[in-house]
Length: 223
Image (cartoon, rainbow, N blue to C red; front, side, top):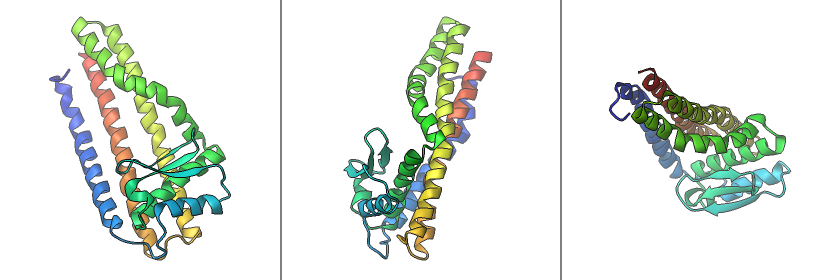
């Protein structure tokens, strides 16, 4: 499978993923150096949003790593990375607001978020086992095994496609929140928008790459 001619179909996806990662890192670094006028840290931004929106029972806590920020609906916790939790930068405000956007999705029962949570186990299983079954099917000349691997990998595609509306909606909610609550002022909102747009491209690139992988597997099966 490594040397199959279909490998070239992955090149556009690899290029887009590299570009998206470079863009998000560059944008994040740029706005990490710009302090917001109110001087609220990422943790304070998240706490302010949750309080003003009447959300209770959700903790805001630090987590190790860089850009490891996420909302854990099971633990009811907004977890902010070290560079976001205690930083008063525009990037920190944007990321913290984005994670609070996920909290509001959870509170309001946003369907795509629930769908994504339901798909996670199958997607994790399919991403690990699907390609291995395809490779095993090739080595054993077993078309049925290849088909099973492709079906399992399709769950990965479903996960990435559902992730897109979830992340874009969270960013939309975040920008609305920082505007309505006055957390960011004037041109600061444009900085937050650029941070979130750059992050969104990483999800687009990942989804496209997964689709190209599926196409590659289908081409292998055809041959």
